[in-house]
Image (cartoon, rainbow, N blue to C red; front, side):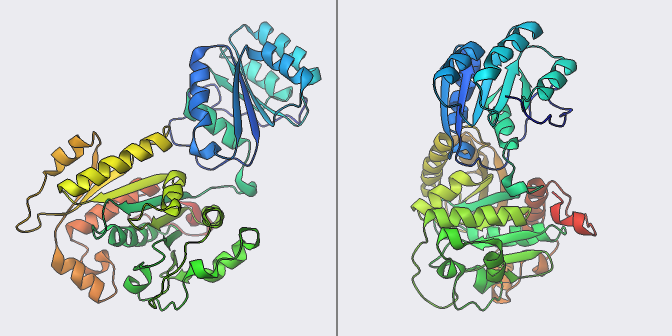
Length: 414
């Protein structure tokens, strides 16, 4: 278990991370040896998390003593999470017993009860990759595991924001396109990908002539690399890149889900923010993309059919993303004449979620932007829709809309 000493993490003993960890693990084996039911329960949530979908996770009670017994008779897993609630001396003695039977390549995370920076330094010197102070939740454990496997050495991993409507025609594509454009106006490199492969409107609304969509040009997964991805991009301003579908009428076949997943991994290694325009089609591609996204924006209109569909989608996402924040609910076309609507607050209350934004019905503004191939903010900077877009962009990027940066550092402004 002896490794090269790692750099001390100053925040290791000060609480647990509250933000959502970003990234995915490679194909690894992960075995947790717990002493308490609380940590075992947290590990159960870790095992079902989307970010560890490639990992084989096992949980055994018994702590470090059980780990020593396990490793004595079979190969050591790639990652071990060891819980020990004893004193400093007990912890060090248990690790000393484990060391002779632990493979040197195994990455070890210890969950302990002693808040002592000197102990942390000693553990790091002995090859422990991370020390977490109990009690520990699932997000803290997920973050610790992800830090062990940086994505191809990249200093940063971009975030994926998926935008989907509860029904067709609710305006989710317009929102996705305008949101990506607004995010890029803060000098943040942004990618907009149109995953409505059959009837996507990104190319049309952005005045891009594209006879062959990007999905039709994707090779098998093993041949997809950053150079090919760059050739498929269209620039739409200094900081917005677009992966459009074909503008010619054709029926494209969905590419393999694994190919799209690899494309998104490449995209987030290049761009700080990736906005996905998803179709309202409950296909394997859409479901897997929603599960993998870092943030989900759910666009609906305030009527009964949208409420029913939103309920079903939220239930699915809660089940498949138990450790993630719920999707952001955005109600569009509020105030449509002669339509009986559900009040926005009642709509959100029925779904037991918060309302992220309300967008009023404004046909003149939207038709003007569409007819001229412009974004909403280009047509009217004072429109309420513009303020909504700026608020969402600031929330997702963590930067104010007016902020401008210069130099290489601006690419990774968040």
